Length: 383
Image (cartoon, rainbow, N blue to C red; front, side, top):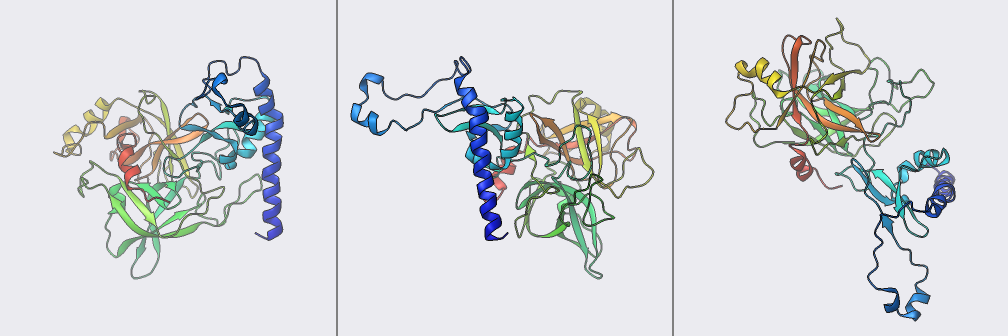
């Protein structure tokens, strides 16, 4: 970007902040009773404050905030720059739900942030539309590439999710997959339609070209055993950081199971085969499936030995699907996610399913993100 472009971008950001302050925050501050239940920190009583200090520090703002729901954090507006436009739009339309308090001159907003990257917004699509499901809808899904050592061609048998600029979350059986003449080599991001590059939406916009990022190293859960399915989780650490775009964004991680009740709908997306079609599509496929009782997975897989292991831990798996449709080959390692509080949050990783893919009362098994949240956080490199 040119010097003039950077200057204009900086000026634009400042203008947006000022407009938000005047449109929304001044109105919020003036609304009687809007923050009556909030506690304002005051270390000294009014009669204890030195008058000289009071005069010199009159500009100091008192900060008052209220908790945000979901994975959002209440932060000063300046620390949520990637949400400027969304906040300005909601503010202009009279929706002040994103505001959570502030000081005398600095509004605070509920900013969705990744626990893996400070001030990094997660779980957001840059493309809006209630029924739109095209390019950019699920920008956090990546393809895991294995290079043929003889021809140099790359196959993509698995998927993963972008959780930070250098880390892709996937299943351990994908990270350690072994095939004759192939080796794990790269991660491809920014993909939507495998038959075109760059991808362009029917509405007219195009995404940057898809990029293969070389893998630096792999972090596999120490209790995972090849050929078994317990602790089926791994991190792929990239050599170079990702450049986020309309087709490449990080997803949030659901660290609690509190809201994950039986019957809740979740989505899985990727480029594998789905039971409702006889052949694979070149475009990213997605499917909404219900969370089901673990007893259903036990009934289907209990006798196969897939769930039997001395290292198995209660709560590490989730059961989903079983209503007569499902995702099949090629979705290993793909994220299972929900939309909550306006952001996408990953709740599971596709681990394994049945040869009778898509059969009625034949669900699939997923690794629970909430169960392994601490392990993911502890093993993600600090940016």
